[in-house]
Every structure is written in C-alpha cells, then in structure tokens.
Image 1: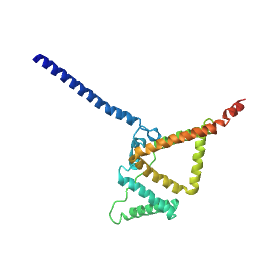
Image 2 (image 1 turned 180 degrees about the horizontal axis):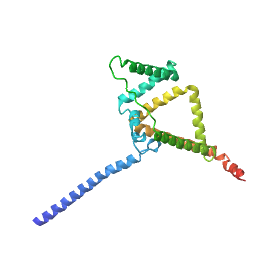
Image 3 (image 1 turned 135 degrees about the vertical axis):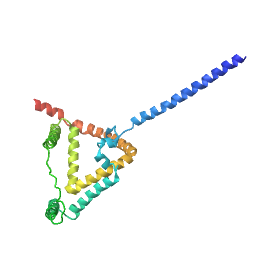
Image 4 (image 1 turned 60 degrees about the vertical axis):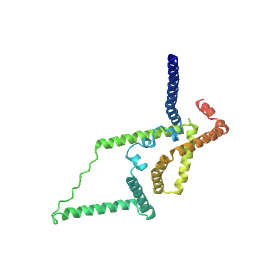
Length: 246
C-alpha cells in the first residue's frame, strides 16, 4: 500500500514537472515570436540598420540626430546667422570673405610689428601645405562619382526603363518649381534645416512614420499599376525599337 502511494506520488510529480517544463518552453518561445514579428516590421526605404548607422554612425550622424545638443544647436544657429546675413541683410559672400581677410591680415601684421615694442613673441603663423596624396584621392573620388552620374544619365536617356525616366522627369519638374520660389541660398538653407530636423523627429516617431509610409507606398503602387495598365502598357516602345533595328 505504501509502495503504491509512493509510485502514485512519483507519477503526479512527473506530470507536474512535465507541465512546468512545457510551459517554460512556451515562454521561451515567446521572445522568438516577438523577435520574428519585429524583423517583419516595415521600415522606410527598406532599411535594416538603425538610423544612426544609415547616416554614417560618425560625427555628422551625431549632429543630425542631436546627440550633442550644444554642437547641433551651434551648427544650426551658425547656418541661420549666415542666411540672415546674406539673405536678409543682403551681404555678399565675396564682400564678407574680403572683409574677414582684411581684418585678419591687419591684426597679424600689427601684432608682428608691435611685438618688438611690447616685448612679446610674434604670432606663430603655421605653414599650410596641401598634400599631393590627399588632392589626388579627392580628385579620383570625384571622377568616379561623375562617371557614375554620366552612366545613370545615359541609361535614362537610352529609353530602357520608362518608369525611371518618368520619375526623373517628374523630379526635375518639381525641382524647377521649387527653384522659381526660392533662390539657391534659401534652398540650400532649407535643405540644411531639414537635415537637422527631419532625422531626429523620424527617430523619435519611427514606428508611426513607418506604419503610415507603408500604407502610402501600397496605395501608390496600386495607383501606378492602374496607370501602367491604362497608359504605359499602350505605348508602343517595343515596336519602335524593332523598327530602329530593322
């Protein structure tokens, strides 16, 4: 009788242990499901890395995302002061550069000549020399980017991709409209301000923006499919290419 009770207790304990282990296994599986769900979340432009790494993960990224508020605020304040100086006060860049050089050269010249009378050492003016290697690297990188841009222009103009062609035409047309409303300096300042505001706000409201952009992109794709079916598919591009070959 005692042995029967012991075996019954052992079986009960095994069942309880098995139930607890299965429940713990199911709990362990929950984070994996959560991770899988997170990995399937749509991100703007299909990015897989954090925004800081997308921006280069260096000092420019820190400035754009306001990691150091003093530096970011100083850069934005300096750009604003320059825009007010050139745009609002109508100060010209060449005039500003000349005035700065006149003031700097005058101070250094007077300091160098007055040092003999006031018993102080003259200013140590460093010798600035551009290294040849640095100049060649910049020129080589610029050459590669220019050649890449020329290849893109050639591909667009060749008529191979109608979608890209229409996108570029629409972008240039919008840019021309913006150019009629603002001059180059104001446009550059607006872009500069956007670079210092949009990334930090996007990082703060990332989930909401990604959710909205996903819905917007789905709707744009639907509208483009309708436009492609009714308009683009009826353009006889293939027939024109065959005639050119003949």
